[in-house]
Image (cartoon, rainbow over the protein chains, first blue to last red):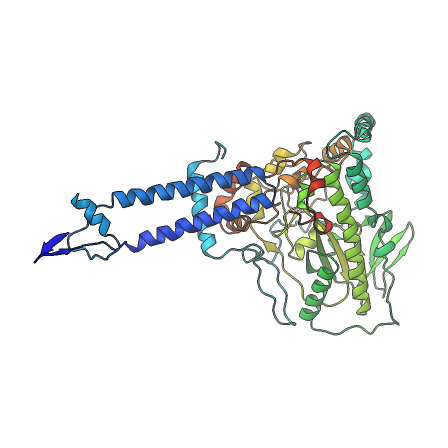
Length: 96
Length: 445
């Protein structure tokens, strides 16, 4: 955040494409395991169902933990990096 | 997840599965049906057509088999009298336990279901009952042979097979070496005659003009197959034979009504497995039995021989040989240790009951049959534990099958995953009676 002639300038970072790709992959991963858990339940395969639920729960929590950790510690912006309005909290955090 | 599932394997599998998921693998994914003169293909995209079956045949050795060498017919020729008596005593002891009705899967109602399953099968035999070779036309005769392109004829026959209860059907040129040299007490010959005929206790004659074999597949109930070994599991087997009797009998009548010769058969007349392999319905696995890429090993086979000109199918390959080399779970689980532990399939037979000249994992038929006797069941443990035996209610099974077919390097990992997820373990037979069953108990929830 910088100050120019009495205005506050928010420099916010746009997430790179691979972050979105990882998010899509994560959602797909969760969907596959959810579908597998439901299917295993229908197939009366108790152990497969239990394992699928465990993998699903661990995946959800790992994903959420990573997401909140990146919110908290987003990393510094490179000099001259373009910004958007999405990540302004990251800049504020940096200043703190 | 079990300890033997390594993290690296798991990640490799995830990458493979993800790639295939992205490529669009869905349960039951099949090529669309085409115009009326074209084939109707029900093969998943990961099944490849090949010119020859993957497991080779030695043309100098492979020949028609005498069905009377089968262990079911000739068990006493293969063992000592003492051994036969010993097994008979074990069988009697088990029967007493079964009659007491205290064993899960062998209770009175389980046994009654299994015996009832044979009802229709009991009415037929080679050239008897629904499998009669005689013309059974409904209206007028003779029927002028129906004329259609071979492709259309093939399509029509496959549709009719489905209509009469077949889960899958394929067509092959008749390889006479698959026809038994002797079956049901008669020699089988090919002669230049118009209609098939039989002289009792002497010979059965197939016309020379019969050049096609239609192979049909009937599904067993996966729920019941997962109860092996038990008489409840046997019930899906006995009913399967009755359904085959119905299917091949009606398909034969359909072909005759089109003006052609039809010779329906279940287990007699010829071994159904090579017909089904030639017709592109599946491959032979470590069990030395047929495995369908769609339905796995929980199937039963029949065939109809005919002179109706049809376009034929090619054999298929979906990586089963490679998978069976990597897996071997059926051999490990076989209670009689009858299945081969060899890495590669070979031409070395295990006894006179095997038909030599084709590459496979030959089984010890004697010890297998003895376990049938001792357990008072048809066992089927090898069907239950096979990773290809799945109910296919989840897309992941399809992804696994496609992964195995296209990336054999994953086979060992996939087999270990299957075990880790608890597949192939016997379910509680008493719970079967509480299931919400669909037709023939095949697709129950």
